[in-house]
Length: 218
Ligand SMILES: C[S@@+](CC[C@H](N)C(=O)[O-])C[C@H]1O[C@@H](n2cnc3c(N)ncnc32)[C@H](O)[C@@H]1O
Image 1 (cartoon, rainbow, N blue to C red):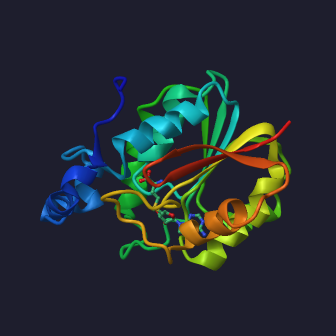
Image 2: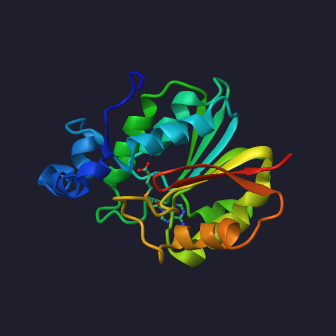
């Protein structure tokens, strides 16, 4: 998995134990910022690989919801060498705003990927969408998981995805031993768009653990 930052993945075989491990004092992003622990992915290794595969040689990539930067690294490691990776996260939940160790941990981790150009946008996705006007090759939706927010991200952003381009939804699918529930926002939106109806011009092309990848048809 390259020579980038160390990443701790969710392990669905031992999901509860994994949560416990993340529940220690060391779990604070402060320690990831200092490099004293790996960054925490909020996804499995298989999902990480699927995200990387989707980004392969793509040139304009937008990620909504970055957290400690694990999926940003999956995207960065495989995107085209001249790609632009737009990382959108307001990092609004920090208790000590000027320190914001979650944001610092993410910046530290993503800096270790030396491919293409990374553009940080520390704002809410709907604010960024307001003035966005560029075609997108790959969109990863992993921000606010409330159902209305997932609908908003889809409605605001999917129209910019080029024919042949992909949208990756995370936490959008039920799977054995997994953490997702039928009432989760991303699950409900993906079900409504692609399982209970047919979205003209879009097809599900890959599903792995909680990840669903859809492609805009050419
Ligand atoms: C599930 S985490 C993302 C996990 C990340 N993709 C990873 O690789 O570990 C959700 C992130 O979305 C961010 N977020 C919440 N609401 C958002 C919004 N409206 N726009 C963009 N990001 C948002 C949060 O600050 C949080 O860092």
